[in-house]
Image (cartoon, rainbow, N blue to C red; front, side, top):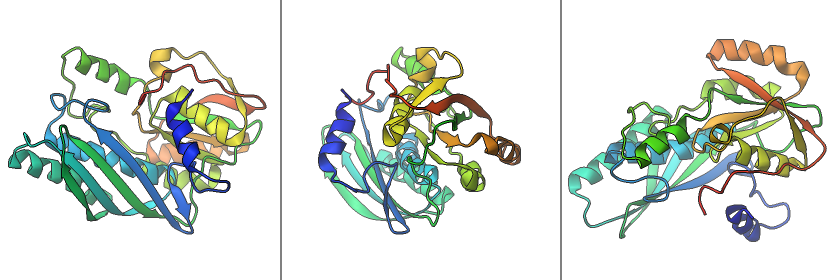
Length: 274
């Protein structure tokens, strides 16, 4: 059982906005992710600046994935007393730097003392044509952008006591903003890959009550790699040429991996958060 999905579903009601990367209320989209020490990162792996930057960008990813313009952020920070003022400054500087890259204003939040460093960010964005998880049809092609697998590989380096480059996808995810903006009219549905290809394919299939036929076999290390923050998108086969043009314009690799069909998808990856 996916405990995370179970709890989210327990909070939702019929016709609830819960279920996409963010909740759509009119033209406004609200999204939140938490970034907890010893669950998502260890403080020995990342500098305070990198922790702040990543906490912000993984939340911005939800807005970008929905073809939304992120505008405002609310930040919650639970910090240990052992954090120095310099580390606090660097944490805030990382958040501000990431927010500034996407034109986001940090408008408030809350702080509290804690035994470890835990961060929560709410992003408020706007979209007139949001990309949702629903809309998949039988015969549609499903693809992902970029490359996947690097985040898990680098996480394993870190867990073994190694180091990774500052531009590693685990440290500094790259979002596909330009691609989503230009490709939106050609896409049926989509979402970001935050929990791994198999896990997020399962969410996409569940939202549409569909299954898939895979184009090829994927090793678990590749398909279960979370925190990639690439895009998983679906589209009619008639849109392939148009999407190839968008990929060339935005320099975005796109790999078609499956075709939607009737059935049920079973995720073989372990849950990342429970």
